[in-house]
Image (tube, one colour):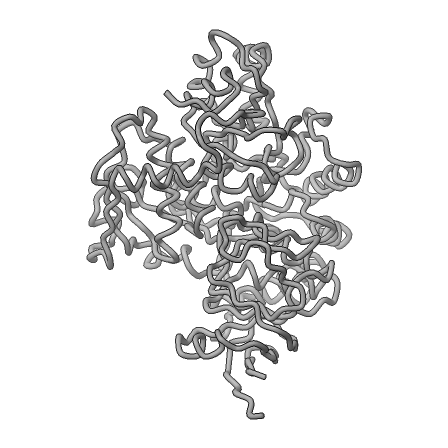
Length: 143
Length: 414
C-alpha cells in the first residue's frame, strides 16, 4: 500500500502512530478535557464524550483558558492523553503541555503543525496517521 | 527562523544564572521557537496561573523549580488557587486536594511570587501601565491587561508564565509587537434589547458572540451602552476568552488604544464588518443558560472574575429585604476583602447570608454545599465552564435577576 507523506513543522519531537480523532472545532483542554479519563467534557463541543487516549489528535488550534497546558501534561502523565497532536495553527499552550510531560516524566507526545490548507484537508479524512517529528522538521504519514 | 539570544539568555541556558533559570530558559527557548519569536525582551511583571491544582503535574513542576533554588526576577502576582487559605474549611475536597492545593500555593510563594491569589490582579493593586511588556497568564487577566490597561502580553499559559518570571524575559512576538495589535474586525452593535437595564448583560452577550466569531482576529467594538465601565469590560473579556481565544479587544472610545475607530485599525480599513442586533444579543445570552426560567436553583455564584469593590457596592442594595433562600457565594481577592472588612461591608454581607470565597473560585474547586439544583450566576465565564467542571445545570442572568432568584429559590426574571 502506498503511503502519502506530508512535511510538517515540528513543535515537540517524537514518533507516534495511531487512529485519528479529528476535532470539528478547537478544544480548550482546561474545562474541556477530563485528564483522569481522557474524555472531552465541554458540553458545547460537538465531540463531547469522545476520548483522546491513544489517538492522533487533529485540532485546528487550541482555544480558551491558558490552563490547558497543565491538563494536557497531566493527561499525558496518566496515559489518557493523545499519542500525538497535529495542529493547523501554531499553539504555544498545546506545545508547552507536551514539552513539560516530556521534561518531567519522559512521556512522548509529538506536536506538529500543518499550516497549508491543502495539506490540512488532505489528512482530515485519514483513519490512521504516523507522525515523525525531530527538532524543527516533521512529517505526517497517511498509513 | 533562528532565535537570537542575548548574552543573558545564553548565560541562563548555560547555567550561569543557576539551575532553575537554566531549566526555565530551555523550556522558553523551545516555546519561542514553536511560536516563531525572533528573540526575547525584558518583562516588567508576570502573573502566574499555576496555583490551581490540576493534578500531580502542577506540584511536580513547581516543586522541581523550588528544589533547583528558583526565584522570580520581576514582580510576580498569583492567580487563584484550589484552596481558600483565609477560610480553609470552605473547600470540601478530599485531603489530597487540600494538602496538594495548599502546598502548591506555598511553593509559589517560596519562589518569590506575591500571594495575591486572584484572577483580577488589576483590581487588587497590580496594574501594569500602558505599553508595559508583561508575561501574564489566565485568559481573563490577559484580555484585561491588553485591552483595558494597554499593557502587552500574549496568552501565556501554565509553566511558560513562571519560566518568564524566573528569567525576567518574554518572547517577542504576537501582541508584544505594536503592529500586531491593530483591529481587523469591526463589530457594530446596532440595537440593544430594551429590557436590559444592566450594561453588563450587553457586555457579556457581546463578549460571548466575539469569542465565537473572531477566531484569531482582533475585534474593535462600537455601540456598547452608556455606563459600560471597567467591570463590564472585565465581564466581556472573560466570556470572550471562554467561548473563544480572544486576547485583545478594542472598544472604540473606551479602551486606551482605541480613542477612535481609525486609531483601533491603525488607519487601515476593517477586513470585515459584523453587525450585532438586539436579537443576536438575546440569543447569545440565552445560550449561556442550560435550564428554562422557573427551574429550582440550589445557589447563586457571583464574582467570576473576582468581584471588585465597585461590584460589591452594586450588590449591597440587593441585600435589603427578605433573605435569600439559597446560598449566595461571591468570589473575591484578599485585597478587596481587606477593604470590605475596613468599611464594615464584609460583616454586612456575612449577616445577610453571603459567603465570601477568597483566594479561589466556586467553579474550580468544591465549595458549593448543595448541587441538587441548578446554579444561577451573573458571570458569562462561570456559566460557560461550570456545567463541564461541576456537572451542573446553570442559569445565567443579571445581578438583579440572580438576587431575585436567590429569594424565590428558582430562576426568576423581572
